[in-house]
Length: 367
Image 1 (cartoon, one colour):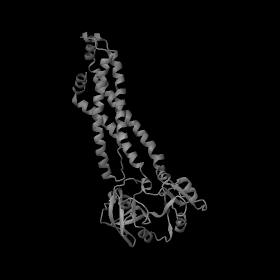
Image 2 (tube, rainbow, N blue to C red; image 1 turned 120 degrees about the vertical axis):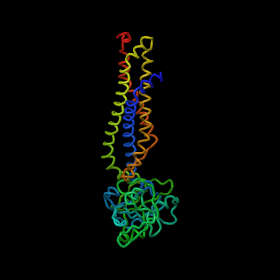
Image 3 (spheres, rainbow, N blue to C red; image 1 turned 45 degrees about the vertical axis):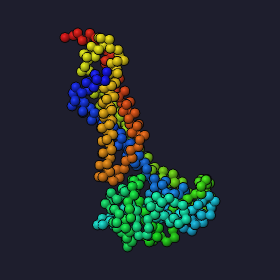
Image 4 (tube, rainbow, N blue to C red; image 1 turned 30 degrees about the vertical axis):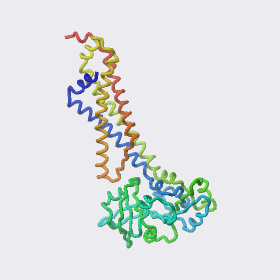
């Protein structure tokens, strides 16, 4: 059964290669779009990775990227005594332009005034807390600007040196530069006003209850959970990007099914006499169907393997050319596309099978 299916497909190697390429392109399209969505959907992940569970902001703030929040530091200091609060970390954050060599670039500066006694893993301190005079860059920003460790950033009269580049890759809309808090105060020139308060809760504390207590007596403030803060940033992507991706995924699936179906149908029709011989000598419809399904499975499997490799390669090349082309290939997506490809193979077998079942064994004896 399998040798017959393989012979049918490989009898014209050029057409087989073109058909495999068509399936591979469909798989590439689906995987790239899925990985691109996964990458973009991580926007806002910085706020989920930081140790704070709650964020105190000025009331009316929609999200960190599209609105400005100004909070008096004294108000945050008073919150430290609220039951369930381990620490309230003042945060400065603002979109800034800076000189990078002979060009200008833009990024979101962020500085955390973390107390020394706050329990914070070494990895988080290395990622978000540079020493005075230093800065930590996101990998996407590094690609965009060409800046790396040892390079200088100039914010007016204040100059900082890049200590290291971190491969966070979560912020596609606006990349972060983490700086020392005192450096940020000099750059921003805002005195005792900060942008946010990052609240670290005690273990077992009820976040909702603590959040309500923090702003109970101050109507000028409001509280977001870190998940809500991140979701507010992703809202624009979810509402505008996801529908487009859904359409592209549908197109990819239709293209793949059409390519497989056309190839299998053609390979079947061209061998009508051979299938007629099989039926004449007692070949059952189930046997003939398995031959067609084997052809479809081999074609789809070859296209999937090539498409998977091509998708990864295209993603790497695209990221080098366009730093914002952030992709995340997840195992569940690859398995899902594999299942979808198998479904393509099954669907593509239906039409040829119906043709086979209608073959009259007498066709073998015609001139």
